Length: 258
Image (tube, rainbow, N blue to C red; front, side):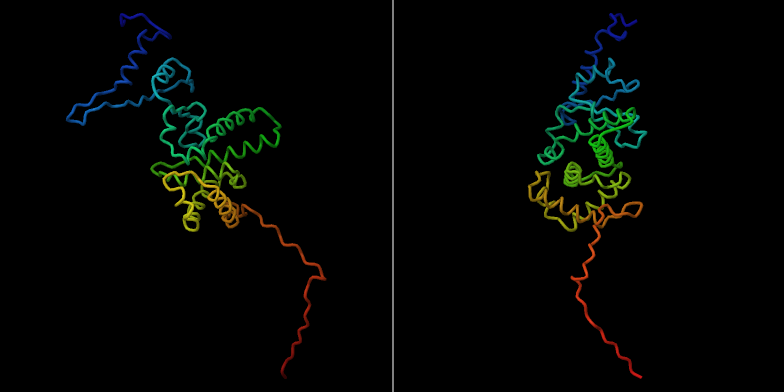
């Protein structure tokens, strides 16, 4: 019909050229509109989440990366529903601040490992303690990265959350309380530890002193945080009873007037 030889999956043989012509040279603006060129943002619908199909791979090979949104994650309440294992950015790292690069260096790998372990856990009846701990932390990381629409977050707040989560400081927080804990922790830190935010302003790397301060501040905050079921995140040990010989005894005489 197109008078062109068919290619893979019966698509036209020159479909790669057609895509590249559309995406690499989307538009050239005239001088009256500021001149320059316009970049296109292609949106591809996959079938059964198959990112290896012809059209997705064709477009991926042209672009500078891809954000893969998964309907299964969306239905699980993960918003934005980004599959971090498949999503790739070839230039996104240049947009990150030095501080964010340091604290989030292993975040993508940790989330990808969590998804793999989560899939394995559905078939495995018995997991070792390390795998269980990895699953628990992964659940909290997913909750931590959820974000409501039209609610941007400051890079400093993101750095604080990602650093503390990576250090395991959120491991004792119930999953359903993670987002509330994070929001209240930010308020507490802004009010009581403003110096840390001044030090990392604009995404500067955390110093060793700031890291120690954040961990100590989180411990203090966790003592006062109440979970949904009313239990504290950190249970303070009950003081040991003093021995009789350590008690100071005093005699009190009470007199009454008649």
